[in-house]
Length: 114
Length: 113
Image 1 (cartoon, chains in turn yellow, green):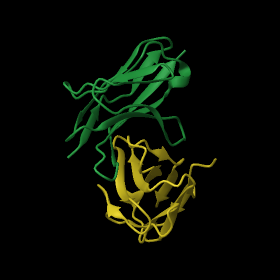
Image 2 (cartoon, helix red, strand yellow):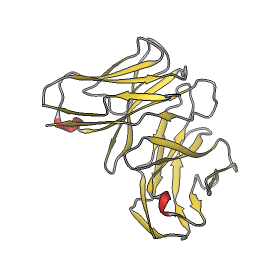
Image 3 (tube, chains in turn green, orange):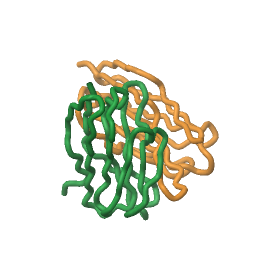
C-alpha cells in the first residue's frame, strides 16, 4: 500500500524555469493539500483541494498554481521559479468522513532554485 | 485565525530522561489536536491525537491531554530513547469542511546515549 507518493524527490531548478510536482494517493481521500516546510517556519499551507476539480488558496499561494483533474492526483506548478521557493514541499491527504482530520503525508520533495 | 505555539528547540536530552514539549493553541470552536513526528529525511507521521476536551492521546509511550481551559496540548514521555530523536509538530484542525491543519513551528529533539 503506497499511501501518498510525491514525484520527484529532489530537483534543482534555475531561476525562471518551470516545473510540476506530482502528488498521488491511492486511499480514495477527498481532501488534498500542498505544504512547504522552511527552517523555523513549520509547515505552511500553499493550496488545497476538497474534491476533484476544486482548488483553493492557502496561507502562501503566490507563485504557485495547482490542479486536481483526477481525485487521486494533486499537481503543484511553479511557472517561474524564484530562489525564495527553495524549500521542502509536502503533500497530504485526508479522508472526508474520518471525522478528526488526521492527515497522511508524502515523503517530501526537496526543491532548490539557484 | 487559528494558531499553534509550541516551545522552540532544539531540545537535547539524555536517554531515559523525561520529555515535555509545550503546545498552546488559539482556535474558534472545538478543534481536534494532533502531534506529528518527522524523522530525518522523512515525511510527517501522526503520533497521537485528541478530538475533544479532556481526551488523552497516547502512542509509543507518548501522551498528551486536550486541556480546553488552558488551550494546551503538551506532549510528554516518561523515558526517551535515542530512537525518539526527531522533529515534533503540534497541530490543530478546526474542521469547517476542509480539515485544514495549522502547525506549530516544530521542536527538534535530540536524545543522546
